[in-house]
Length: 307
Image 1: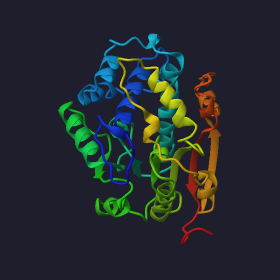
Image 2: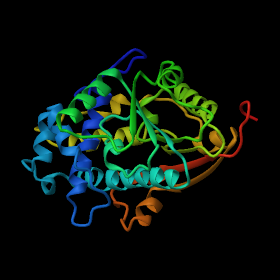
Image 3: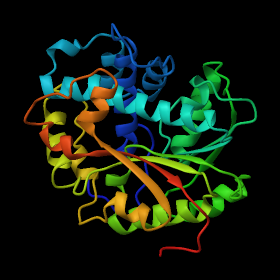
Image 4: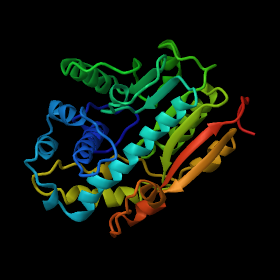
């Protein structure tokens, strides 16, 4: 499926189906003998989407042990570590006193419902309107209650989402914790820059942002995820993730944020795995992901723009 500047999706199609795949991975990771987190909503959300392969996967009708090693490692290990990294980011941010959080491209993320948010925290979730409506309806049908004040914003991140966010009550004068998880490759390179420009403009001093970066996701990670998708087999999801990435050279996120008044810390993916007592899978298919960075940046002071 070729991407266009006006394409849209729900959790069963295009970019939305990757959110369902990640939710399935979170469901599997929650059942690990030594889990890094517990997401009790992941499997019910996947079942509600209704993509047959992912439903059978979370129901145990597809034996994960029979999936090729690289695909299994991606589903069971990479997503587990990534989820815990962003969970801890929000815990640390709210522990420091931040009471405003924004989850960009929230997909089937259930953090608003499962993390121990301090009293007074407001969480904003931004995604396509169809995705927001689906998750809101499904979580309500499950009897789930957010553990923070949840405000959803249904808008494409390639549009004027800052205005939509402010219209929903977002306060740019208050420090904010921003998550940009599993998102950048699905944006055109210029939209990636605008995203961080907009985050910077909306961020008071002491705000934090967590994200990941690979300099050429379309050419390297995209080709590997295509191979991983193929390894799900003939009864799999037929999800060619590589078609969903936007090609083109990208500005390096570490330098881009630093130029805009953020103090940036980064770790390679193997280092993040080691932090959680997990070994990064040593496979040819996943080797390019070793160069991906997990990034946390803190806004140092208010500025008018790049310097």
